[in-house]
Length: 156
Length: 147
Image 1 (cartoon, chains in turn brown, purple):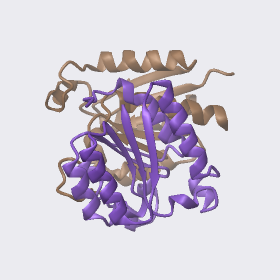
Image 2 (image 1 turned 180 degrees about the vertical axis):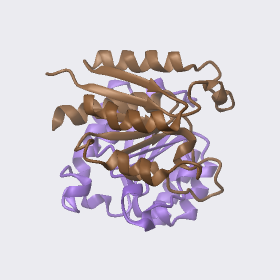
Image 3 (image 1 turned 120 degrees about the vertical axis):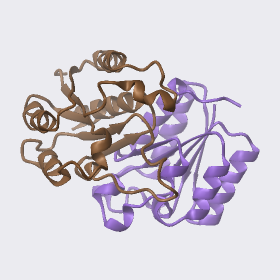
Image 4 (image 1 turned 120 degrees about the horizontal axis):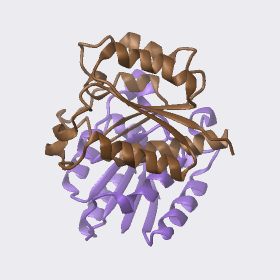
């Protein structure tokens, strides 16, 4: 079995995970999240490029450039998934672009992003360009995404 | 853990219904895998499917009475229409996960609204039929209060 390489991109705001104190993750840090993802990838024989940026342009560049070196992408776009300040169309088209080819993409969120809505959930625009969507499982959102991608890559 | 896996309308057609979207596995195949996956961690998995909204509501109410630890619900088309299922899930205090085989957000716009998402702890979509087993595999690691 070849070593698949996975790219995990964490968007703006995720450098400081103390924001998630209110969601029952008071001791979560980006370093801990990275360590957990590395452990899971290692156990599955996958290489990992774990990336975080607070800058929109760097985020877009990493999606386009980073995926060329990798077999699959997990992305936590955080607030950009439903904030109007970001050029969502450009973002989605980047993910859909030819550079991605048939590589699996899963959008993940630490919390259930639908909880703040009253009864009706808005669509997550970024997820329109991904094959998978996971939210609300804490760090396990990432773990589930990694396991699912591993299975997908090794069954195709 | 006691786990209910509740499936909504047309999921009994899996394997024959639009296999390019939903895959070639039948619901029976998935049920078997879920039960086997659960047994690895000593979970008791009850796997259900109904085409009737009211029956799904009653199963959720049954889970409340029976103090079932986890509900994994694929409400299928009722995801986008059913306030009754939303209300029932709100009344259930155990751990609950919304699951979809495909990613509804990638499909027709009438599938972009979910009445389920705001009533559950977590949402998992687009991982294919394997999503069920992956989620059951993960349950022992989640902060779930066992009754």
